[in-house]
Length: 242
Image 1 (tube, rainbow, N blue to C red):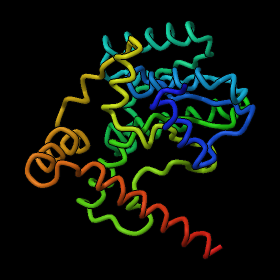
Image 2 (spheres, rainbow, N blue to C red; image 1 turned 45 degrees about the vertical axis):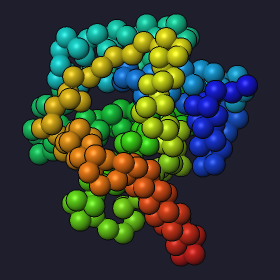
Image 3 (spheres, rainbow, N blue to C red; image 1 turned 180 degrees about the vertical axis):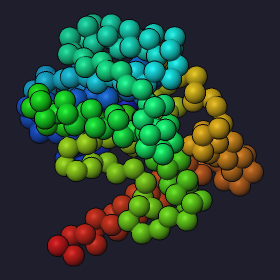
Image 4 (cartoon, helix red, strand yellow; image 1 turned 135 degrees about the vertical axis):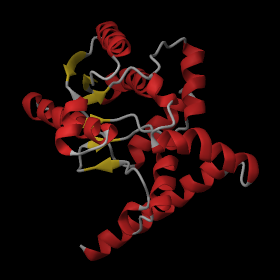
């Protein structure tokens, strides 16, 4: 019998038609709990879908000791699961300064640029990122705060550009943690996730807990349902426009 988490993982894949039999999947693997659990889940369904799995890890050169430990962890995990790993380094700080971007935006741009290069070079058909339901909730709330409207209000898309897939998007962090603990899955912890200098961390660590405690204890699911409804409307309008 499939675990609840694996079942939801597969349901999201099926609902959004994320995978085809025989796909070559590049997993964006930071070593954190979300991407590590996603890697184990892909390994579990590898035979069922006939998948070829690869992993990508980027050392941002921002937290030297932690970053080296994360890269080593990813290498060991991929060796254990027999997944070919592409481990890269890039001066994200310098890139952000040259391009006038925040560190987070610079890191995101570099990751996707490198992953797309690997995709082209190795015949990869899908790129998987470990964005979860909480990430989607945070993104929607951040966009509302900034006054975003229209097609971007639904937050993180399950599928982007026909090849970037987010199979963890219907799963909250609490369930991911429970799954990891139940199976003794090791993972790395990024210390920067606790710093409230970043807006996303402020929303995650301060704003959402305040709303849960004082206004709506189920705010995460409320926002997630809003995001799903907004996405359905966007897709409907796009189909009609076509």
